[in-house]
Length: 358
Image (cartoon, rainbow, N blue to C red; front, side, top):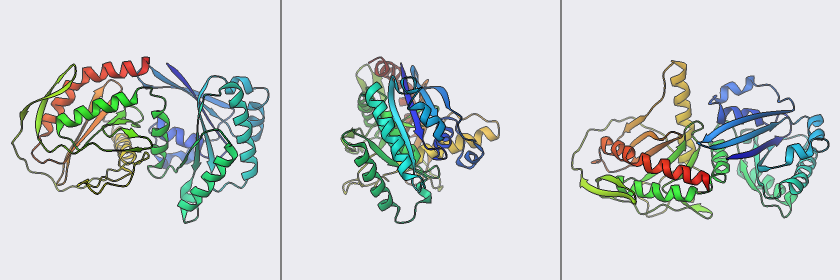
């Protein structure tokens, strides 16, 4: 299954840098070396098994934009699944940027009226404080320009987790049955007595689904499970078979782990007060660690953390995904978590295939 994704915006707005950061595992420090995109650069990114993102990175120079909107219009805007339009927050050509955007909307209405539209207000690190108000004003302006076309607006920068938040939200719309994956992650979380289970795409480490499924428009976490079973997987899910009573000594290292896709403030009845930016922050940290491994010619396979406050296991779940299990019960062994991951693999391979076929 192929999905055509248009990445558009003015020259210098940061399109190629974010593509390099998300899909090529390059750190933000290396993006300054990238040159401007000439005309259209197409990349076929195998994102999730048989889901292929046909990514069109469109150069933003005036001559190219004029060509896209005239002689190349049908080629560029036909069969588009997603349009990602990037606006530089401190652009000096605001009116021209908005004019090109309006013209792109008109072309999209004509050739791909069902396309989803995401607007990224980029380089937020350069905005003058208070940045939240700057983003709010810019988002309201873009919604007015968009008229009756539904759009989703994100504020982003390559220097924090906000870019992962945006792209995770975008990719989530391309997976038809992500809610089914979330339900089975909740079953896995219950079996492991986990606080949360997160599913990442293998290459980009973008968040695909979590055990806390989105309940329009925000995520709501299931009740915390306090029992400590080790479990076996059946065709209907996990079934608890025994209880672990062993204890262990934990290290004193600290890890930052946060998230951000349309998540409400931590609930009063949540004893762990999970940070609202934990998912994308985790993506960012894991990709940075993978890059460090590649620098010393080592391959990244799995990760275990046994800390004073929580235990986390990150391991391969399917050929195209990693799963992160986080538990706060100190009696649960990492070996039990790894066993449940192994038992779950076949079921999630089937679910992943079903989600892409449907």
